[in-house]
Amino acid sequence: MKVGQQAIAIGNALGRFTNTVTVGIVSGVARELTATSGLGGSSTTYEGAIQTDAALNPGNSGGPLLNSAGQVIGINVATTRGADNIGFAIPVNTLKPILESFLAEGRIIRPYMGVSYTMITKEIASLRRLPEGAFVSRVVVDSPARKAGLERGDIIVKFGGKDVAGDNSLSRLISGSKVGDRVDLVIDRSGQQQDLSVTLEEAPQQ
Image 1 (cartoon, rainbow, N blue to C red):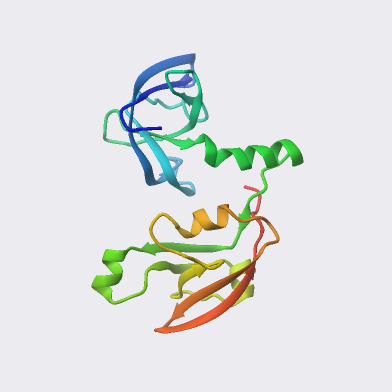
Image 2: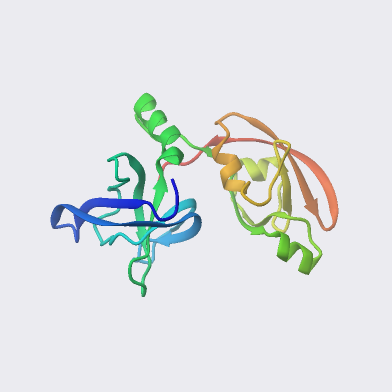
């Protein structure tokens, strides 16, 4: 998939017009965004999203994004308020493991650690004299992270031996793991590195 290739979105525009087709291009790849329901509900962060200028209207979410060969390249998830022709889709390769677990188990099974975090980029790390990694802003009560000893303010710098930096965001590394995996962590706590181990659990059903 490349920027500039054709993108075709299909969905139920405005919840009324079934099988509406709009055409555009792939405007960007590997985008990160936080989407909300628009009703004051919970927010969801998507990483590696496809950006397209194909018109996505309310009701298009959940519909496929196709390439010119008719292959599904993503699932439409969000538009941007206050801007025209900026929509996003989750890449199909990201969804395959989720779909496979749903077909096998009848429900979506995802690994879960139980933290909210902000990625510390190389630029921020240099400016603030911090290590690159995932800055933990919240640890969920009774979560695997809490059981492992993670605390608010910790910086997770390694997950399973891999640096938490650049394209290796924490959520991407967790998504690449399985429920029940025991993962070694390296964290920075007040300037001191520590080793922890966390056992991933099944994400709560929403």
